[in-house]
Amino acid sequence: MKNLIVLFLIIFFQTSYTSADSSDKVKRIIIGNKNAKISIIAYESLTCSHCANFHIDVLPNLKKEYIDTGIAKIEFRHFPLDVAAFNASKIAQCQNDGNSDILNNLYLNQSKWIKGKSIDEVNENLKRFLVSEGIKIDFDKCTTDKNIEDFILNDRIEGVKKFKVNATPTIIINDKKFEKSLNYKNLKESLEKLI
Image (cartoon, rainbow, N blue to C red; front, top):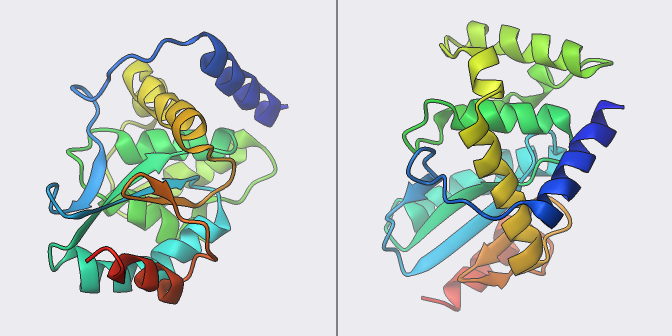
């Protein structure tokens, strides 16, 4: 039932919401030189196991070879697939100065907080996980912040409208959708062609 509610909200916002710029209040999570030659956008859902695998298996090498060297930057955009992902996205963005630490921590430890038979159970597991990691966030305030909600929903709306995103993770490189199987070898081949 809760999944239906979030899908309804997303559809409602896609059809009736006029895009408002919340960027002055909520900062985009970016790793790397903002003026890098290669711009990568990752549309992700925090409950997506493939997205977690991207953070575990691909991002460390991508960071080492392309981001830390100034060749590329990566922007993380939200594409929540369910209510749990929507709430986790709000936590990742809450009190955020653009740092990726909370986002990465949620992906790297996805199995610790994503369990539960209801959204209430998942929320309780997420709260416990945050406390165990020493992340001090007002969970209720963060998950009800209208500016953060709008920011996340606008990410999803833009992903669908501009890039035809329909699954996660979806990678965009210099405004073009990455269509190959998402592994480091394929990603590296595409990036090398742009250097």
